[in-house]
Image 1 (cartoon, helix red, strand yellow):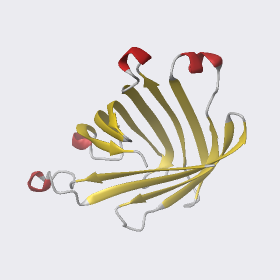
Image 2 (cartoon, rainbow, N blue to C red):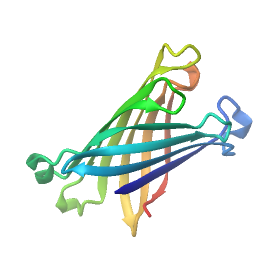
Image 3 (spheres, one colour):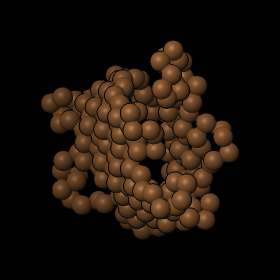
Length: 171
């Protein structure tokens, strides 16, 4: 069993005076329960800014363990969550992570994900994609420096694309 969580802090969209003042957040918590070698069931909680629009999702995941993935330090993950606590919609996702080879001491990595949300929005007919690609450098003891490019169709058109840099810590 594994518990994975991420927290994004953001300044308000479209407010240039608050650009460096994080006032919004998006929290994701995933509980993965393996059933067989490379697949299992999962539950996910999404919380956006404490506004009462929290949503729970339930479904299945797979983490393939093919031999070629072990030869090349490559990690793959896919999940399908057709059940949502609001009674409609769902999400399908794919993710990957690739570490640099041993000559670079495995300190560099490249990762990303794509979430496809269906039957979302005001009329339950919308689909929305969210994606992220990160380049990371492992500093020491769980600390990483990263740069990322992201796309979020839930945001207004002029704010969907972005880049950022930061520090990440693995607990």
